[in-house]
Image 1: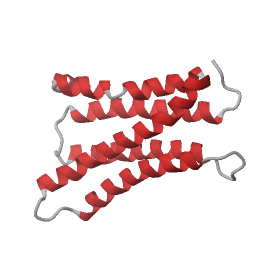
Image 2: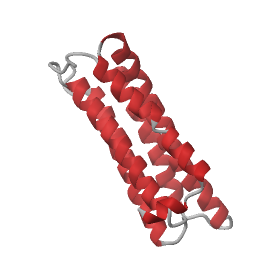
Image 3: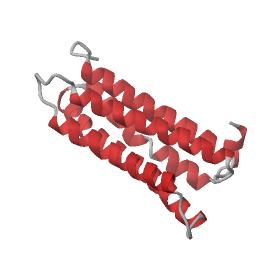
Length: 164
């Protein structure tokens, strides 16, 4: 984590500031009532946007580094992660009581998996020296908080007896 101190202050402010909607969403869901319903709607949308933002960064980086011949795997994974976020939101909207599969819980799982895949993918880029050394510790912390917030939210939303 020592290299995190080398990160530009603006990057740290924006990175940690981006966690606020995740934290507010998880707290809102735990609060119950109308706040929980609004948070359960807003949090997956924000999650999908951020997942697409991260994947889009890899897309853009690939075009900058290999403008003459971008790697198809990088381009495809970028698109798949963005689509995964969108699919997670769509299936949560389609969730209805009595379905054989809890689509809301599935959507949370897709979002969590998307952030984990994105983190692992970014980790391989660090080894390839695509990103600065401070990026990995930052991504680890940000991803851990995001996964924790989404996992907690999924637990609360799927637990009929949970209340504060």
